[in-house]
Image (cartoon, rainbow over all chains, first blue to last red; front, side):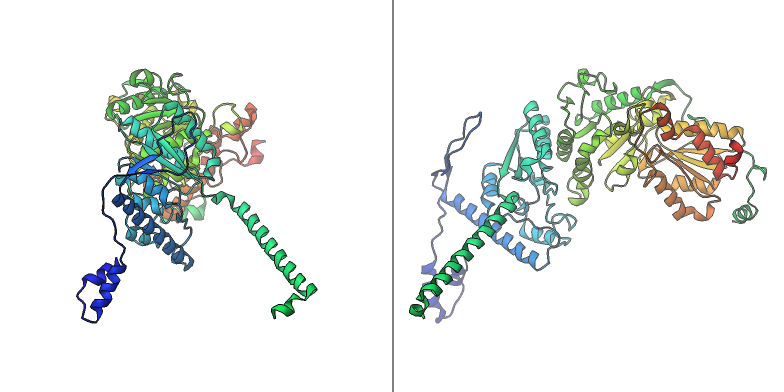
Length: 269
Length: 371
């Protein structure tokens, strides 16, 4: 984008050849709306239902909007991380970088009357539902211009008019709440559904199973989406890190010992 | 001011000064002549029926509210009239169904959640506080939660420690909630209708032992538009010598205590709080400024209770008017025992209220004399 800007502005004769060279480096961005059929890479594992088709119809322009959205989200989360480390964001700041494809993919197939509810990792989900970067950063830094006027913080973003119901700090609480949104949709005879997102930690919560049970009994239009980012497994990773460190040190010691014992250092020195 | 000083210096009782007891007011003085007797159960049932009829977004959810006609028959006949889409029997999953009801309220429905007792609501208290009470604030006004949580609160008869706690002070300490505690049938009808119409989460604390009690109600109370304002207490009985505040079942005990005190020349003013949050501080303080003495009565545990908050409010606003320390009557600071005699000792009785009022009037009988 910067490159095309360079080539389009009025430039003097010295810069013009540079600009021409720069524009030739610009990769042409497709705006084609020709349908494109993509087959997803990993097959679905159905349980007591028919799996959806693996073929997804899209087009280059749409794919590029997905990319742009995901890239924006990634940059946003990295910026939030820096702000958090600089102590300009206080309290909690749960980041969604790496998971952008989930919310962008969901948004591609739903409308704003469908509801989404998630836990505290909600920055990108809020952006996907129509929030602005200004609203997000203002809220993270506790300003009045934030989407919750600075009263919510990182974990409490809401956008009711776009069907985004937060933003919840208690692990697992969003699942029964999401089933309640689906209940209201069915009660009002809307032809819409609710997506309740949760993680590998919340998968252990009793209220999730209670809500699932009631949803099955009352046949609610709810879709539960588990985003397994392994955040629960912090102990496992710590262990793996220690093991990796241990074996690295062992290898290093082995090399040092060999070098000393067999005098290979003389050759290297 | 001079009267306060002379009373303190001389330390004389009111009766010795020859102050006449105030006029006795009947319970139904505020409205037209009593038309008929209505039990609290009928009052609640009719309120639910009328509100469900008036607004299609109102629905009931709870254990046994439908087929069984309600664990205490409060929701009798409503399943037949409104169908299973609006009167929903839930499994025994307080956390699950309370969360679902709150989510439905986020979307614009007006659920009325019944807890079989508020002891079981502890399983769902995260949704009551974190998901319902705080959301309007956290979302900067985007999401309101027009939900009512209702059910019996406090001690029943012989149900033991895990089924007898009073939760009024717990819920009343939380900003974002409204907490109501009706006493009579008029209270039950008016406050439940107001609660259902309210755009915020309301905790509606009933009492199992009051369900069967009948109270005379006027034609105005039976009208379908009737509703009582939230945050306003009612002076059940006017008096001049001591203010007794109470809510729920304790209002009945306070009225009986006032009758006994009246025979001994002490005119007690009984305030039925009706609304624990917001507390009607203006009415309580106005009454204390008139009588100069206060006795607070509640069934729940004493520490950090409703009486403690009322005492602080009076000390903050009307300290100069107090002629005696505030007396606090509450349940015993112990889990509710089962044995009938111990249960009676663990709960406030009419004699306790009478003794406290006399202490506030400096007319208490020394313990040695009672032996």
